[in-house]
Length: 137
Image (cartoon, rainbow, N blue to C red; front, side, top):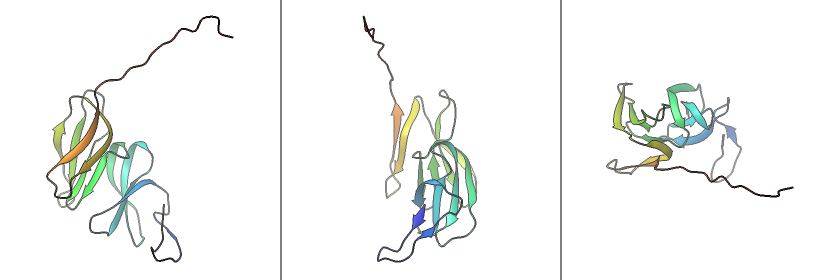
């Protein structure tokens, strides 16, 4: 991941050890990111550079987190029968379960700008078709 001034200039690598799916904090001071695309951890680094710090040990998928002023809403890595949406409070460092999900979470989580609404994806059904092709060569 790299940053470059909008009006031109040199690029700077942030963070230096690599990452995926960067999200800037609402105050613009930190960059939050994952180390992989799925079943991963969340890290942060100051936008101006510096040491990276692990923030969360468990995230189901890179798109299943939303950074807000007071913390991070996220879907942790869990089994299909015990999924939830949780919140990490920056001030206390504590994680609270916001909702227990009856169905498997899909890919995507966001919070409205006023913080009153949350939108997440869930998998209602899955399926596959098995086809028989006769005389195939």
